[in-house]
Image 1: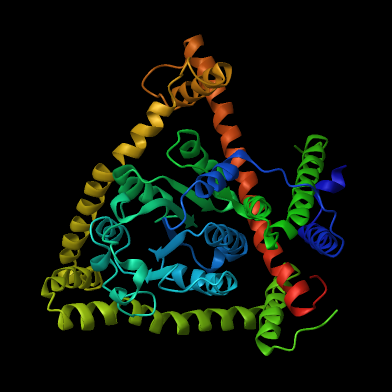
Image 2 (image 1 turned 120 degrees about the vertical axis):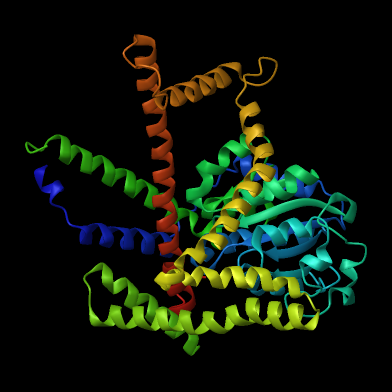
Length: 273
Length: 205
């Protein structure tokens, strides 16, 4: 048992590699149970009437793509299936660029036209100050142009859309977030002020800190990590990278659990503890 | 198995393998990949930031639309750099005071409502839901607060036990956060592994 204490990091890395490769090459097809946090997000969006505007905060960067990209894919499948109209915006510099690359092919798949059925306002300087401005004047907050620098007035989706509020037709906010600025800023500046329900799509490690807001009803729900993406993919009937990574993630969790137990046994039985 | 023909996929996959080689030990291939990544990120970011911030704000809005009030925050921003000149470094306090003032004002204006929502959500509602669950939740919150209560002696048994229980509650919360963080890191690795197996080697659909 004492030798367990001397186990180097390399065998552990090797084990992690083997588990990941085996899980991808020989999928076990472990069942994915839909959690209540994800289901409430799905139900909230599903209940919206077609044509409703949904604000999508693209508040993440490339470092979070492995977990958040599959969530964005699943969410936009749902939005387009229901005939909802997403308006993408980002306080994070690269967020709208990342989301643009993901959404364009999905929109094409559903025959959705840019500027008519969805739009990307892009990133605008000013983070929370600019978000605050959006709640009173979108045209000014966006500098009058979209992600590509083209005038917003040219797009039919923006007709009658003056501010990020209910009067302009916004019925839900989804914040795809890595950290700050993110969901907390949306909650304080927009959701709590304007009464628009909001949901969060976030990283696995952010699930515990968002949970109190879900429990209090301040967030409608949350899609957490790759697992959350898998659940949403199943709900919308589009299994993708989230679902295919579930086996590997589950086996990795078991491996980590096993290693923690072994490590503790080694520690407790060590005479030098 | 159908290996990718796209040079971009090869570059991404070989870059991934080079970075992973650090897991065995530090080596020249890892360092080459690291330097290429940093150089690419810097080279990409400089024009991106210029055209996202400086160009639209100064050329389009300030000069083009005559929003000369933007000069004030620009000057305040530049004053931050006076910290590097000892004789006038005191000037950097002005933008810092404006920044802190804005932060405090923002917090008071927009954080009060969400915070109060959290407080009211911690009240036990005997008329709805699982009362046992809510009571347990309430006791856990009180105990965790008692742990941080340093103005009252913990020698009193009631305070001592509550504080000990609060410590356990905090450790459980930290354990949950740590477990999720480990899983998140693993998911980042899985994302790259999936890319290598799927996009590069074509081993999985």
